[in-house]
Length: 271
Image (cartoon, rainbow, N blue to C red):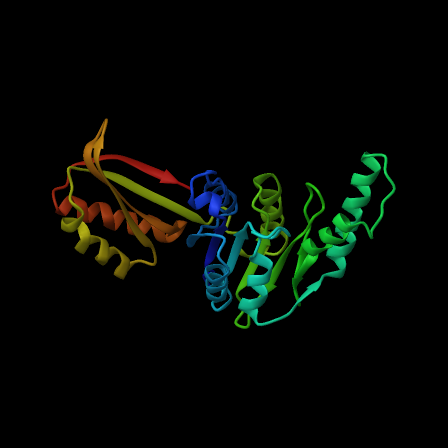
């Protein structure tokens, strides 16, 4: 069974250009190292209605989604509340999260030479970072102990919520991939083979691409370029899928290109 893998990146600062997104390329890298690939990605501002709608979509379909950002406890952080709304459940202080947050507060107090006071107003507020939708499971944060959380929708859609800070988010995503998604790893099983087709137009090659997909269990891709410094106008045309399927499909693709009289450049292989 093919599992869809999605990414939701939350924050006005990304959409306004105040900060450049780093999550998309890193998640693609982390997935690729495990023979997995990203199916879709969305950027969403700090708007409760939009976040809730996107999370409702994520929970409503089988698959895995990583959500980065907005899980803090400041007024512009809405992700925890939106996750609960999307699932139709209440929010509650998670007992494991409470202990982890308290441990972090004790560490900070010790570093500052102070006595930890759980009733101090700022410490009471910090517990809000562990208020998650009822039924959540914890994603531990090796950077500062403030956890993320995972939730599962009615049809099995899993969303894993991590902070927006890369130094925290990326090791937490890796942990989820290796501990909760290990059964989906496909190391060594996926392959891409492609060839440069000089001076080609996609419209002329579309029937061949459709024929390859009908006859072989692979995906065909075409990446056109109009101003490449070496090849000029060209298309990188290829197939991707399991190693065995790609070998047969690529042979058929080359045969079809030769029938078209196409001028071919270098071939490429990507694992």
